[in-house]
Length: 324
Image 1 (cartoon, rainbow, N blue to C red):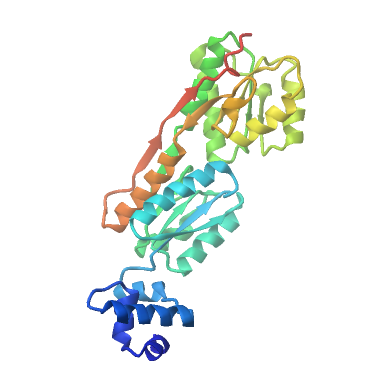
Image 2 (cartoon, rainbow, N blue to C red):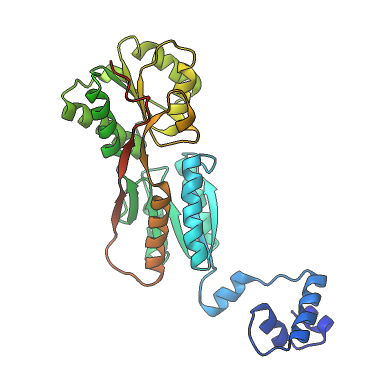
């Protein structure tokens, strides 16, 4: 700022007023200051300014499983939109489903003094963040609940969604229904398997453990799973959008496909032949709810931790409506 003031021939206070868009500066003077700023490449230190004012760093930390996954991309955009309204920026990092990486990212964001955190848990132990919460950093967990910690959480109705899928397939005459899910230690995968089992019971069709294959999955593992399960199963529920895509690759070229309902919508699902029936949910609402809850805490809400659940619904497009 000294350099800018010297080059523009003004006081440091005038420079401060210009960069903070305050009134009281003649337009010609402001233009001269801006020209000096541009010439010198000056950038104000927002973190230092906010800390000096006692308003935090103006940033939030967002820890995801994998930003490349379209599900998390939508969630991130929702968080960013709410943060922008509140004048804050979002720093993101992917844990790659590694608890150690999750912890590393969370503590790194805390070391950078973010004003709050939104975390998609990779692990089941979150006592390590209790000190930060007690010190005043609000944390909201999203998509999965934290372990050994009572904290704000926003979830999808995972069990309700797969129960819908199982009942829907049973209504079309299917009694041997296979389920391909993610790794069972992941909360969402376990809940979706539980919902599938409950949906079978509600529909009065058998639940066959040997028709259940849990991940993680690849194109090759899904193809191998389908070769065994589809000798009996006439219908299939896939536990997330990536598994659905793996399954579609494995099923390509088959003269007759099983009825299929996937959990999570995905791009171009409605343009395939047949279009893919899915259990869908409002991912934007998931991210928005988490961000709004975080900002409520930043604004002084001290009520007990909340648990919000975003509903699911079945979107019938054709692939799940194939009769036995």
